[in-house]
Length: 203
Image (cartoon, rainbow, N blue to C red; front, side, top):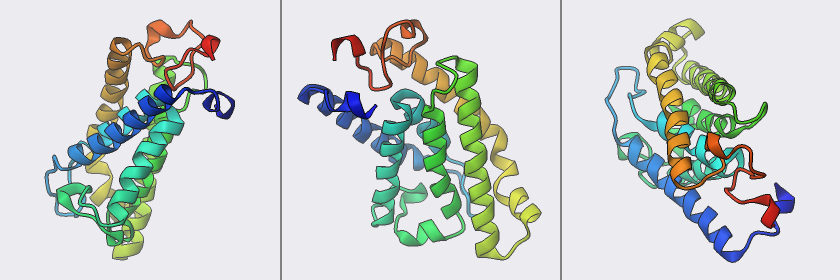
C-alpha cells in the first residue's frame, strides 16, 4: 500500500481524506442513537458504523477514520455516546470498548483470503470479539467485578445486536461500493484494485 500511496494524485488524496472524515463523522452521529443501560454501556449503532468504515475503506483508512473519531473524543469533543467526550471516557467503564473499536475497524477492513463475503464477515467478527474482550477487561478492572459478572453486564446483552451489525455493515459496504465503483464490491474483484478504490494498472 505504501508504494501505491506515493503515486496518488492530489484529487485521489482528497477523495480519501474526504472518505476518512465522512466515516469519522458518521460514527460520531450514529453514536448518539443510544439507549441507556444499567451497566453504563448503552445500546448504540457504533458497531455498525465502525464495521462499515472498515469494510468500505479497508483496514488502513478505516482504522484512520476511527482513530480520528477516538482522538476527537479524547480531546473533549462530544462524539461518544450521549454527546460525551474527554479522556475520562477512555479510562472509564466503557473505555475498553472504545479502544476495541480500533481493532473492529482494522479487522473489518482486512483482506486476508481475498474479498469473499464470508471471509470478510468472519474477519469483522474476530475484530468484534477483540472489542468485547477489551470492553470486559476494562470494565472488570474499573468496577472490581469478576470476569463473568462483567461479561454478563457489558457483553452478553449486546452480542446478538453487534453480530447483526457487522453482517449488515458488510452488506451495506458492498452495496454502496458498487454504486461508487469501489473495489470492495464483489463485482469488481477481478480488476487490479486496492482498498483505496484506485485501479493499480493506471498508477
